[in-house]
Length: 493
Image 1 (tube, one colour):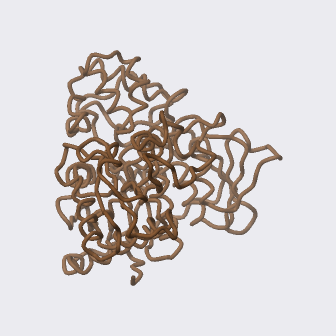
Image 2 (cartoon, helix red, strand yellow):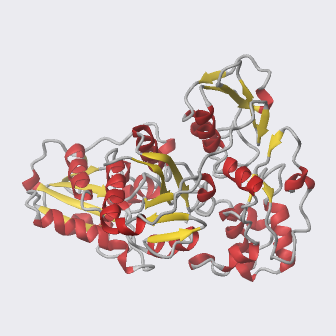
């Protein structure tokens, strides 16, 4: 692929509030593409993690932004949720002088066939294909008829492509043909099962092994599994080979680049009118500052920087790293090893120091620790920050969240005060109102953007997050404000 160093790439994933497995492949593919230097910026955005779909565009600075959904099919998310949240009106959207190119999801690209074959060969090396049934497994849903089309297309391509398998079948977790009936659907002595999912999350490492009969009950998620399962498994008188999710394949980075390349071939003329704007970023002042729970200071006379937890500034026994990518690992778990789905929770782990060579590495590290935070500060200074009132956020929800806007104003005020508390929940400072005419009245001083200490860059919140939307849904269904907290912070769908 020809590098496009005047453009940004945003890879969009689902994410999860339960564990980091859902977003891990998206981050890994972004790391690989960033390493190759094909784009001026490479960022990730998520439905259930940070940066959110609405926030990521504050993070990018380029005039042309390619958006590639790291999703399997052209289903509900890619056709309804992502365009709505990303404010895209079609394949090419021009907004505020920026051109957004909305590419097809990775799962429908023809090169996925190559990845499936490679994964089948990897999981069952040397097993004769003419004695093997390949089963490609999906979720299955009634939300969108296209959700299973990507799998059916791959089954047809492999079955008709002369690849030598005795059988090639599709199966699903929640609709016919059911993966739990794999032994009835197939007859070959060897069965290779490949989950057609983006990540090794709850489905591929908890649900499907039970449906296949490999496990009697769900096991820990992948991130908590120390021992990988060993193939083959002797089940139903056959040899069953079980693969990790197709989206974890390293070659998926190539598929993402292929989707950008194919988009250029199809819509190149529309992109040529993209306005090239001044996208230079003001340098950060070379003086110590704080961002959330991170202390940042210049190191010596050169261009390098030191980062640590604000509580560890004077500590001498810290683990030191020079890799800005380490910042993402530091942000995933708290001191007790619990997953942090909200990066702005007041639970950043201790005991580390980052020694970074220049401002580019510093910005990358801070974007991992506090996604889009520097972009919010930049837009606030430029007067281009666009806070979204809570009622507007709740009002555009669909699917299971469409009831969330039914909460009363009093419930909404109490909910925000409870769920956004800086001491226990989130240290961002809220810039949005309940509605354009009605401010939030129960916020503590440490939640207001105008009270930021002089030595801090503010952590700004421009729109209610997914946890608030989930909480509003629970309250609208009859739950209490306090009771909605536990439920609202545990949704993964």
